[in-house]
Length: 199
Image (cartoon, rainbow, N blue to C red; front, side, top):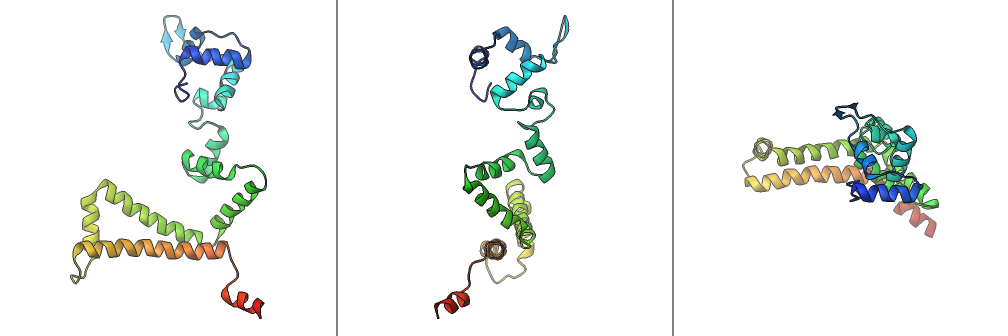
C-alpha cells in the first residue's frame, strides 16, 4: 500500500471495485496486524482466497504477503538464490530483456553471448578488483591511501600522480579485457576479410 501511496480506505475501495468484493477498512487493519497478539489471541492470516486477491492486486505472490519470500515472486526469489545476485540486478536484466516480439530473443542472445564467452570470467575478475578498490575507498579512505602508497614503490612521481596512474592502469586492464570479451562474443569481419571480399 505504501509503495502505491494508498491509505487503507483507498486500498479497500480499489480492491472492492477491481474484484467486486465487499471488504471494509477494518478488514485491511486486521490484515496489516496479522501475527499480533490481542486479548482474543493472535490475529491469523486471512483466508487463502482473500490473500490470492490481495496478491493479484499488488502483482506479487501470496508467499510475499506471508513472508515466505522477501522478493515479489517465488520466481524472482529462486533466480536470486540460483544466480547469487540481488533482486534489483535480476530485475534490471529482466526488464531489459522483457520486450515484445523478436527484440526479446535478440536482447537475450546479446546477454547470453556475453556471459557465455570464455573471456567473461577475466572481465568479472577485473570488475571485482575495481569494486574492491571502490569499496575500500568509500569505506576507509585512509586504508585505501596507505594501500596505494605501498603500491607506489617509485619516488619518481608525486603521490597523487602515482595514484592516478595505478587506478588508471586497473581501469585500463578492465577495459582491455572487456574489449577482448566483446570481440569474442560479438565477432565481426576483420580488415583482412573485408579487404579480401573487395578484391
